[in-house]
Length: 322
Ligand SMILES: [Zn+2]
Ligand SMILES: [Zn+2]
Image (cartoon, rainbow, N blue to C red):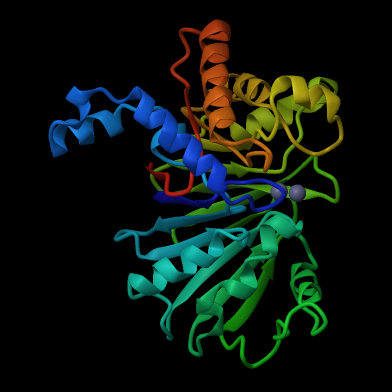
């Protein structure tokens, strides 16, 4: 299966600012030497070797992921409908998908704004003939989505004929599994204000992808950690909420999010192959995210130098194949 990240920001979308772009340009010019700009090739090489925060951006859109599965990667499953689902919808149309008489499935972890507010800007939902299957362990996900867009807040109600795609709702209980295309999807409740669910996606070859955003692990909640370690066990890729630095997480107990340090501990204990740091705080700029990444890598090397765990920070456009 192929996983692509379209929105990685937590809580609120946070576009890069004019001043931040200018600061990047100044810094890059300071770093460049005459030899770096001799030819197109030297420029390419120079850009390639810049820190991530200078050559790109982690992105400001809120949670939205795309899983392409099946023999030809032609079966599409989305996770959550944060603002990242808007460019995701446009990309699908650009690839000739969801133009009518097509289908996809969306899994919802919970209904905080940053996970649902993009659905009204997901163009495929307005196209007649499309079928969208909504999955969640929230028994009332349909009501929650409808509740998001009364006429006072959005001109088109969720049930309006203008939102013309056929909508089918499937709910399944905590700990239960559903089969979607070639993937078995199992849910687990995680600690988060108002409730939230993690989902594992496992294919017939045993490849396992776990999505566990909006999940709080802190030093006070380690008593019941074993059940989560079993749930995450041997994942090829684990996306885990790491909204805060460790220091900040100590100030924000019960806010519903974790730090990269605790996520790394849990990923090592669960024998995960690759940990993806996710749900970045909207106040963290690209420089800070570079520092968070570096700190997580150092922490892993200090705590478990022999463990093969890889750590990567999610950014818009990141694509993984497992
Ligand atoms: Zn969130
Ligand atoms: Zn949340």
